Image (cartoon, rainbow, N blue to C red):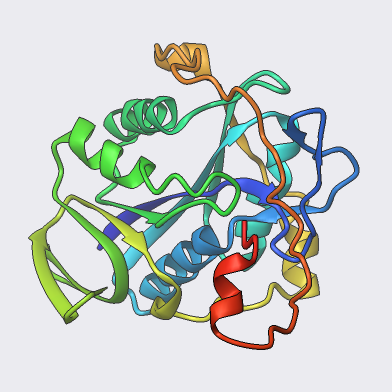
Length: 245
């Protein structure tokens, strides 16, 4: 049986209307939750455990103290272990640094599979899984919409422009998941209460020997221009005279 590592990220809840103030996304007093794609990854790992294919599901998050609520959610859903790689409050950790931290932890604990959401809904980078596979020199399968694990192999079906593509790889491997892979379960109240009492392993980012200083700088963030109402024209020729910007 395999051990599965599932990195999860705390993001602004998908149902919240994003607001930009002072060139930054407003995060104070805003509801946060687990990244939806990561939730799908957790669900798939738990299903493999229920099928007796996996023996342990490890949820891991990278962030400040508030990120532990995301780990509690993963524990309530069925993860066996929670790991928190702590970074200072308001410290931005970019995809490359996240991949390096995950590489360091993976080499230390040696899971067989790493399941990640294909992207986080806050930055939409879609980079961490691919970078991690490259750093580990592990095979990767991205945007998985179907998954099978048997023996020392993993078979992944992914959607491409021309239809479906099926990939087969030896374990260990890195996989990123897409929306159609599964529908995540809801955590039950008893499991939520139990999760509040379960231990969380804490590791400082510096203890993994990784420099988390950002390599990219966000100059500014702005909302898209407000949409303007439509108008009527008397003829097709009149369209060319309109300012459509």
